[in-house]
Amino acid sequence: MAGPTEHPVEDVVAGGVEGWFARSTHHWDDWTLADLVAAKGSQRVSLVVPARNEAGTVGDVVSRVRAALVETVALVDEVVVIDSDSTDATYAVASDAGAVVHRSAEVRPDLGSHPGKGEAMWKSLFVTTGDVLVFMDADLLDWDTHFVPGLLGPLLTRPEVALVKGFYERPGAEGPYDGGRVTELVARPLIALEHPELAGLVQPLAGEWAVRRSLFEALPVPTGYAVELAALVDTAGLLGLDAIAQVDLGRRDHAHQALLDLGAMATQILAAMASRRDGAGASGAPGGSVALRQYRPGPAGIAPADRVVLVAERPPARSVA
Ligand SMILES: O=c1ccn([C@@H]2O[C@H](COP(=O)(O)OP(=O)(O)O[C@H]3O[C@H](CO)[C@@H](O)[C@H](O)[C@H]3O)[C@@H](O)[C@H]2O)c(=O)[nH]1
Ligand SMILES: O=C(O)[C@H](O)COP(=O)(O)O
Image (tube, rainbow, N blue to C red; front, side, top):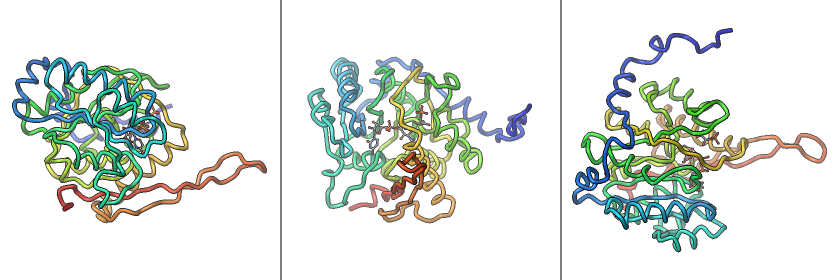
């Protein structure tokens, strides 16, 4: 039986997406390291790794990138871990591996502190020196250092590109290009409904992406997990779709969150898109939260489990004194 979405895709997705995909989709080995070091010139590159309780994996991420891209070739100028309120040994492990480590809450304490990945990324703008920032998750299990030069390729060689998104094969229950549960059930449907121009992005939620500082500091930044989709939507709105490119990075696997935790991530993404749709709060004051009621087994049967999901956004960093 045909499913409800099985119409010819050309009837549904604007033709512009196909053109963008053809123009703006690259492969990580389209450039050699020598090409990229030459194209980099005097620009500075910062690798930023937001990390919350990633003591088991962050050391490997830092030490491998440093060995391949800082010590062997001069492509990355600094490896900065933003410790996002970790309660484990993330700070010490990352520092021992050679990263410059900052606790998110201690960066610009005058601006206050919020929990969340987006907050850590926003705070990175105040402690990094790169003209280009490359973000990478700290919980990577199956990955390689070519992710970083791959993400830099379009930024260093195409002046019109301001944001580069990674994509990869990722082992999933539904096949290698299963985007992940929130990607398939929240992000892609939202893109279909509200931002069909972004439908060419293979992994819109990927944590591996690169951006020019001049762009990232002009964007409002959700403090939680909506930072990725918001950056895509806001970049396309500000600079147009051709400011975005994507790169096939090969294969990647990461640690998986529990379904109910992904419910909180989905809530943050839906809130950020609602604020953009309704024109309220895209650069709004911090402090917003939503009560998410979920259910778990309790001693007397099913029991509600309420969690407070933070949906605050930071204003563009360049608007902050
Ligand atoms: O409060 C937090 C939560 C997470 N992280 C770090 O952010 C990275 C990604 O977090 P994770 O919980 O592994 O995210 P995923 O479930 O894998 O979510 C995917 O989808 C999210 C929504 O787009 C992206 O933010 C992620 O990078 C992407 O991997 C990791 O290094 C975390 O340690 C923080 O720094 N602070
Ligand atoms: O990208 C996503 O959708 C989320 O990170 C969840 O991914 P997972 O289903 O592979 O855990």
